[in-house]
Length: 335
Image (cartoon, rainbow, N blue to C red; front, side, top):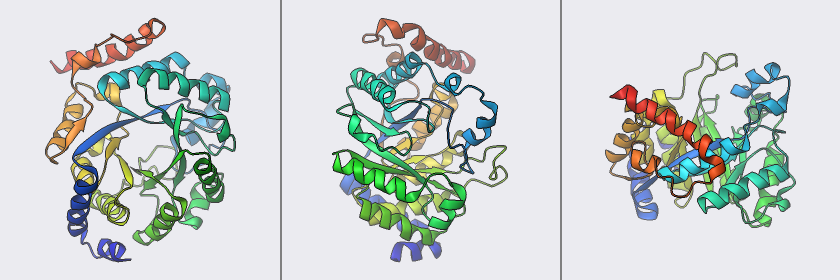
């Protein structure tokens, strides 16, 4: 494929320039801030080679104690609404919450934000239980090369993920996948990815860069190079002009943001919101978006929006206050 050849021949800037033109024509200049809301740190599988939760499973004696309180989750949704952040999806390890519990949480978030949520809560055959509170289902594919996938994610069958997404489509839900770059894939593995997007009718993809966690087989591996990451995103944007692309980067790789935006990203994710709000790191995100010539939807620095409690449910007040106090503490430290 031409985009793969261009990537392998280091013509990344050419890919980015073409992708940027396509993106501006199809999607405009808005860039969203996305927040994955975690439900629990427990996962029944717990054997994905890159995953932080694989290091925690042996330490968790009671999985119920690894679940977040419902009010804490809802308070996070309230803060996302105030700050103009999208909830990227609800995320949690396998077996952390039942389908009925997830549905109830999603319904409450729908009430708070007025937007139905995406789910990224593992492979499920119970999708018919969900309704208007859910907009789409995400399959955590991570790596599309079948041999590499079986090695890195032995308990998450690609076939099962694809079957779940097919069921989601049949039920009228949108479909998305997540991909982690830096796990040992090559540019030629884009052929597997593009086939999955095309054949599966995938409407959204979230790219992440490897975050090497201590205690995992990847702990000494570097995150992928910024131009490699940008080239992959650009190749996806050129091949699928209408695809929604969310890109995740870490607080120590904020310089990735500009190239990712110019490669075709619609939104940015994977930030520790409450640790970064009001800090130089949060302001750096805003600067990266500004100097990419884009309009940021959402904020890392507007304390007036943070403190707007006009619509908070009283039962969430104390939980919301904890998050606000963290942000205000950031402000006091920076002054």
